[in-house]
Length: 461
Image 1: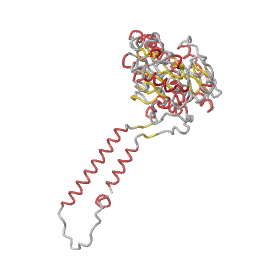
Image 2: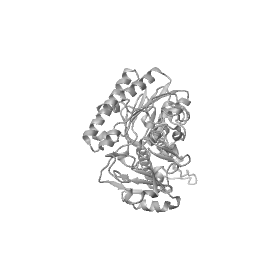
Image 3: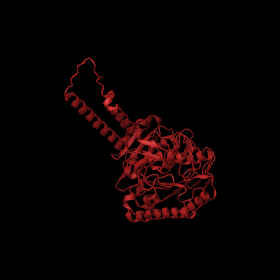
Image 4: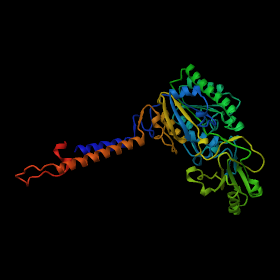
């Protein structure tokens, strides 16, 4: 009986890999603290190991640090910022790249497009917040100034890169402080992406200067929130959309050397090119020419794009997709357009951003190696106490960041369970062996015997 109970206890411990002390994310929770989401565009995860960040280190020490996030393909600004606030892969939310073509409407999307049509395939979190009876605020976050699902953010700026970080932060701080109905706020900043494009991430002098400015802005954020009485009273997530790879004039893939421009149209070019054959009957020929074009470029027919990229189930994805290897640039002809770029395969460490979190809901001095960027959306919905819409993320992967969650490491737990089972099995075998070798007592009434069932032996009760 005792052995059975121990076995049952060990199995239960193994199943209890993650104990939830609060409400489940599928339902509503009681939200008492606003949430601020901040993105520093192009903040590559391993910059944390290469440069000094004193203000960010202070933020980490009193909060959560996540070494890297696996973001969504393509690793571009618009797709990943929309994935952060919807929890969806690009093929699901429809913002696929910086340039897109919609064959249903014959519309073309560029970074400057202000048509909300492109964004309506998904519902960003600020719209959900407003649908739940609260208000939202955004400073330059992609899409926040457009009427998505007929809603902009409650308070917002139209995009203007000339507005300083301090001005953006000042307005958000004011909205959070003076309007208690504002539950969600988002802030976007263009650096270090801008410097990475211009000089390349390998230019340590220029990157050091840009990242020092980013760290100073994090210090400013902490200072302003403290002055406004918000520090420690709101939850904050600092993250990014993608990383950056070094490019070179020696790593160019020139399409003009492989195929005539009269045979295809380019929707988007590098490092992921979207191609439409001019003649629908010549798709195979165009694909064949592009597939043999360069050893550092992979060509895919739409149907054959790997499932792991989650990048083929949308009408806006073109018939042929070209993907350059890390650090290689696809051009039609000419010279290198920029020294640093992103958009490459999202499995590459150079494309991964970081994450930091602080506030009453988060653990202090806690460290995680990584998870998927789409997991941030269900986390934010949980923090805000609003129902999460269908998404590709997982709250289970991020719940251990929170103070009201008790989580055990799965590998350690499984190891403990296996160890317990081995010990119990060994003890059981030894017990039976010793019992079998023991002297047989004199039994005048041999017909009266106990059942040979160890688990029911009264000596083990």
